[in-house]
Image 1 (spheres, rainbow, N blue to C red):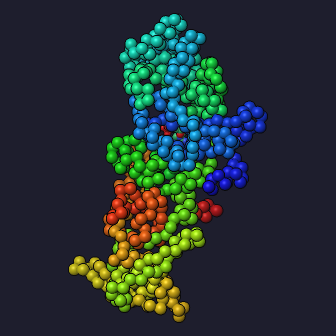
Image 2 (cartoon, rainbow, N blue to C red):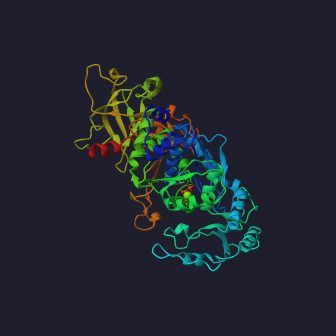
Image 3 (spheres, rainbow, N blue to C red):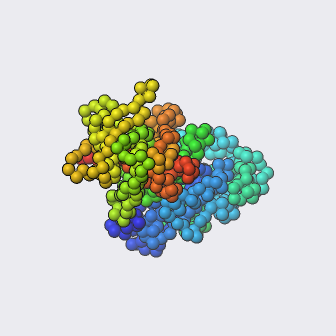
Amino acid sequence: MDQVESAAGDERRDFIRDIIRADLASGRHDAIVTRFPPEPNGYLHIGHAKSICLNFGVAAEFNGRCHLRFDDTNPIKEEIEFIESIEKDVRWLGFDWGEHLYFASDYFDQLYDWAEYLVRTGKAYVDDLSADDIRAYRGTLTKPGRNSPYRDRTIVGNLELLRRMRAGEYPDGSRVLRAKIDMASGNINMRDPVLYRILKAPHPRTRDAWCIYPTYDFAHGQSDAIEHVTHSICTLEFEDHRPLYDWLVDNLPVPSKPRQYEFARLNLTYTVLSKRVLTRLVAEGRVNGWDDPRMPTLAGLRRRGIPPTALRNFAERIGVAKANSTVDVALLNHCVRDVLNMQAPRRMAVLRPLKVVIETYPEGETEMLEAVNNPEDATAGSRKVPFSREIFIERDDFMEEPPKKFFRLAPGREVRLRYAYFITCREVVKNDAGEVVELRCTHDPATRGGDAPDGRKVKSTLHWVSAAHAVRAEVRLYDHLFLSPEPGADGDVLDDINPDSLTVLDDCRIEPGAAGLPMGEALQFERQGYFCPDPDGTPERPVFNRTIGLRDTWAKIQAKNG
Ligand code: ATP
Ligand code: MG
């Protein structure tokens, strides 16, 4: 696909790839191993997609391999549902870990042995301070920490306490195992970090085998080492953890020495990429689940009709850097349109129908007119669309008193019906409330197919559907879930929610051929945008999500910036 082609074509360059190239050239590594390490406490989002594309991408480019490793060290927040969704989403994005599926929990025995090893080498101790006291003793960025009164326990004493912690003899929070490093370190992560905590909670995979669990810091680097990961790539907030990562790898008899590299996480305008907030949106019912098409989750984007190729292209376009920045969501939309424009079959759909009776067209007659499936793709061919005396057009395409620049249908005016005929509006029918409910038009039979033999021009072309043949459908239009480009910048992010992020149109009419297209595959409703069928629909009453409108604001932004 295009991602693989471009990777093979011109070499991609960024600081991570430069490091890998250098490591391979110098012989530091013969082959590279990366990993994507999600914590199964939520669904993956587009920020994770950046990390997945990077980790799996470099592995593929340099003939290495990438592991999928679940960082399942916090049983309180983790669930099997999340494990399954993550596997599905990584595959959907187009990546494959082969046989290299791992869980940090697979290493609990080994990690525990290494905890005892640190105790035996005098580099870890059991601390009885409460969580609050540990925080108070830790100091601040400007003030060094203080040693815990329990720091100088004997090795034998520590070993016994650790074993009894493991045996479940102490309540949650009463004791922790800490590394003995330096309470005066300039790096707070090095001030005797916690390695194990007591948590009497069943784990989704190890069930009740454990009542103590390793912290992220103790599990992560050691898991990398066990798997012979060469380049452990993570986001910038872990930069300050790197000295600890290295300290643990250096002080334990690990089978390999991985190295950690940090890159800038993805931030997107109008979008929240914090699992904590996304979890809240779901829990508080602000959206309809993790796969709500307004969510930035991969499940939501998939349901919205965004093709995985577009996400991979997006990841390639934004690149990988060391400085945090925010990407304009218009770039993502641009990447989506780019793919859909080439792929999406065109169909006609009227979202807000206005009835038109063509008085000059014979009653009871139907003819099939030829319509192009995709002008961007000659191989997509054409289809037949039924035309008859009564049709629907878009309500917005008619104005009784048109202003100067309105070129669409108006009383006395002639327009083209796409693939069909020129029609002229002769009469406007209104209801008692004075609303337009129907137009009476005439057509010119000589313009069949859409052109006048006498060369006369019309200023606009409308889409339409035959009233008797169209399928009634529900269409869901989406807007940004948040009103502000930087949600939550001042105040609670949930106060920034856009109350109009979803508009449901329940009386849309779509051409018959649009109803049976496969789930999850986007199509273009001409002049409206890209849409895809939603699983809430049935064959009798299809439901479509608007993936995205047609207007590309990114191109405009680029032009303006020169
Ligand atoms: P948290 O740890 O707060 O639950 P997280 O988003 O960091 O949330 P993880 O499951 O730990 O969730 O993330 C897995 C990987 O994805 C990590 O390596 C993390 O650095 C990376 N990642 C997470 N968010 C982003 C983002 N916005 N951009 C790029 N990479 C990200
Ligand atoms: Mg994380």
